[in-house]
Amino acid sequence: MANVPPQLKPVKAFMMRAAELDQDTSRPESRLVAYYTRQYAAELSMALRGSDSSPEVMGFLLGLVEALEAEKKSMPEFTPEEGKMIMEKYVMGIFDVADEEDRSGAATKITAKRFYAASTFIDAMKQFGELDDALAQKQKYAKFKAADIIKAIKEGRRPTPGNPMAEEENVQVFGDDADGGEAAAAAAA
Image (cartoon, rainbow, N blue to C red; front, side, top):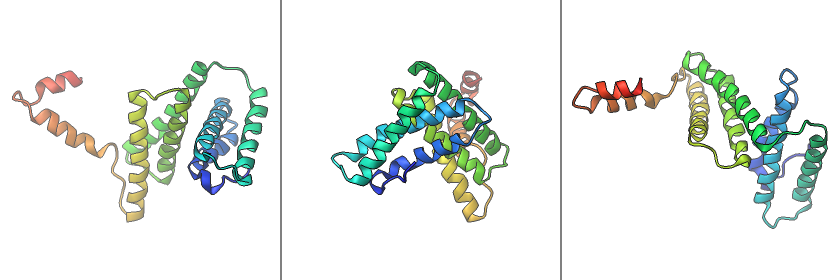
């Protein structure tokens, strides 16, 4: 695949994730997720290009669309709903591995990369329609954790496991009730 033109810089992350998945032969769904990620990159490229018809941008777009058409012919057919389900299951697998590493206190640069990849793939799922609230929250959390882990590593400190806001939120929720938070704790259980 040709290099992403500077005018389409936001597309680069999607193209990189798709290329990484092309190397994954351990899971058959990797190919489908790579395809959908490239498809989203094509949609985003078309929206970003606006009226830019420079040879660089048009060459990239044409090459991407042709590659997608060729790839589509060699793939099994899925409905958009099936594709969305497969992609969401794949993405949640990546997210869950990163989250488990993080919450166990074993976060590394690889953990941050997994969170970032999960966030990118969730973004690509927008091609199936608006993200549901749970998925949108996971994307926001994954972006935050990726940045937080990298920041901690650069500062030479251990990344804070889990959601650093969770404890503060629980203190506020459970500490503000007249019953000492027992009703809120029961509702959360």
